[in-house]
Structure formats: structure tokens, C-alpha cells
Length: 162
Image (cartoon, rainbow, N blue to C red; front, top):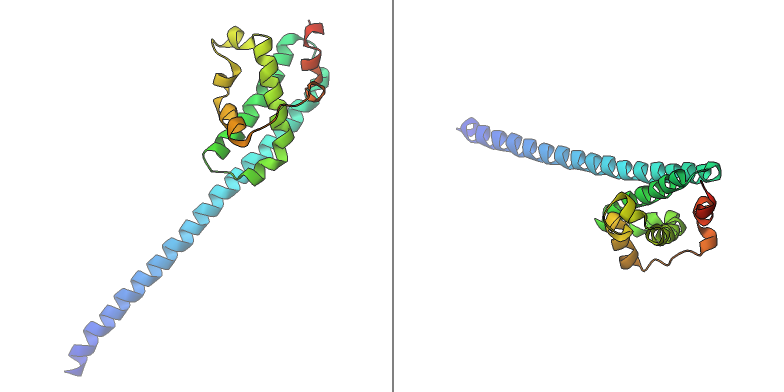
């Protein structure tokens, strides 16, 4: 009689133990997934900063207007990716402090882009529409525009290029 009562209790405890084990396993896997995602965004930020550095390095080798326009577009594209991740709440404002000055430069580049009519040349819209993620980020964070002296050399000397 005692064995008949103990068997269901032991089975029940085994099932309960299995549920607890699976719950802990799922919790551990969720933490690993979250860490992997965070590492991915950290890597995106590091790669973007490296890309920005490389783009700025090529500023001194720009000889034509087309190369200058490509450099400006590349800077805006890189920063637009980061702005989109921030706008969606994927990366924190704190992380973008590392590129805060670059974002001010991006705002200056967008102003220059419109002044030169490049939006009409490449796309039938303004820079604010082309890089809407930057526009949203600028409004949300009240980003100031850089001084003209902070713009890449090729942009400041755009009219002197071939």
C-alpha cells in the first residue's frame, strides 16, 4: 500500500523536477540569445566607427566632385544605420556619444547636400527624406549643426573639384 502511494509522488516530483530543469534551461538560452544580440549591436557600432575612420581618411585623396559626393553619402549612410538602431531603441543614447560630433557633421553634410541640389540629382527628394532616420534622430536629440570648418575638406572645397 505504501508503494502504491509513493510511486505517484515520486513520479510527480520527477515531472516537477523536469519542468524546473527545462525552465532554467530556457532561461539560460534566452540570456545567451540576448547576449548574442547585444554583441551583434556592439560589433555594428565598432564596425561603423571603423568605417567612419576609413571614410574620413579618404577625404584627403578626393579629387573629383563625384568622389566627394560618394564620401558624403557614405558618411551619411553609416550614421543613418546607427540612428535607425537608436530610434528603434536597440542601441542606447550612451553608445552614440562616441559619434556625437560625427552626427553634427552629418547634419552639416545634409545641409550642404541640399544646397548643392544633390538630392535632386540622385533622388527626387531632399536629404531629410533620403536619410529619414538621421532626421528623426536629429529632432529627437536636438542635434546641432557643425561649423563649416568641421566639414570634410572635399566638401568645403567642393566647387574647386573637377
